[in-house]
Image (tube, rainbow, N blue to C red):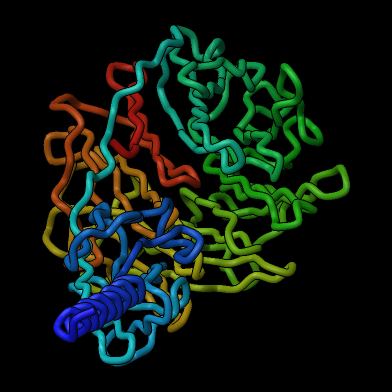
Amino acid sequence: MKLTNIFLVMFLLVGIASCTKEAELFNRVQVNEVKMLSFGFYEADNPGVLLKDYVVSQISATAVSVLMPDNIDKSSLVARFTVGENDIVRVNGTVQKSGETVNNFTVPVDYILSDDDNNAKYTVTIGKGGDYIWSAIPFTINDSATTIMLKVNPVTGNPFIMFNQSRTSSADQKVAMVTYEDNVWTNLGEISDGRIGSYYDFTFNSAGIPYASYPDYTATVAQNATVKKLDGAGWAEVGAKGFTTSRISYNALAFTEDEAKLMLFGTVDVAGGALTRRELGVSTFENGSWTTNTTIPGRSSAIYGYLPVARKKNGAIYLGVFNASSPNSVSLYKYANNTWTVLADQWRDANATAMNIRDFDIEVDDEGNVYAAFADNSSTSLYKYRVIKYTEATQSVAPLGTYIAGASGNLFSFDLALSPNGVPYLFYRNSSNYPSIVSFDNDSQDWSQPHTFEAEVGDELTMDFAPNGEAYLAYLKNRKLFVYKYSAP
């Protein structure tokens, strides 16, 4: 072979080897390139904050947008992500652990990925996703009501509505219950044997069985309290019928955490008994019988106990009471381990000369903070809705947001509800008495713009949240029930 041909062959071999090395190097860099592969926020990593997963499964750009509803608290979220092999991830210099590290996502967050000398920046922004929407649920049961109460079964997530039937004769006016499941309304039957008082309550045990309390006009002493539970196809008495020794009016019902006790909180409606008239009495069902005429330690018998509201939370019963003694006030209590604790004793705004007695409600969050809703005239001479918050960590009470203008005179009707991720909602009658709702915005620290369901007068407003974040509400219009569901679009 000629020398020139030998040099040509050697040149070609060197060229081929060089290209092979460059190709190998290129492929190696591609395999180990710095890259974010997936990103998301998972309910399991953010308990009590998220009610579902929000995930970007395939990332094609360095700007990552995750869409969420506005009412989610974005200040302390844990992200879960996958990146290239050997990639180290940092935010503001802090190494990130997928599914563990907490960051504030109220503003865009820069994730810096690095592998030796290779770096990449991915900016994660939480955008506004499709908010939950309200949709009407036709009420298909042919009945009418004078009062209603809606609660969601914590076991099944289905709404139950207890209502006082509207009848020509009060003797025929019984209290009944219905439920909504799989898009079908089911009549659970009449609870009482006849007429009841104006106020009643119900709760659920750990198996999701409803228990109902009411002043029973068919008891031996009319208006003594009766409690019943749904037993098979009918309603069975819990203990004796009309078990209290005095007539009651306002009442609330709750189980202790271990369900060893079922407790009824009732306002005595007659003088001359074991308790003072209008005093708040406590009745306890334990070991198959009722004990009555006990009181909350330290609470004066001279304080009128109206509109009690009981909530079971964190292994305790929380009780809110509207004190209708002059001046009107609010008291909050906690019952746990057979002991009563006073959270707020006769609280009232120093600027208020009056509090409206038409309605009152409380809710409790996972941290043991208690929210109370009522109407007073502390801002102007006219009553306005307001919510206060008892903060467990500081054991103090403070207003939540600003005042909410609404109905006037004695036309207040509202319900306070707390979503599973801790967002307060107030369902109320606006200044035209139309059913409206607001939620508390964590960013502005105030109430949202109201959503009005219809330009018609509504009454007996009631709502509750399911564990999955969906909510149900109901109100009366001309004694007919109207029901809405709050869910993802």
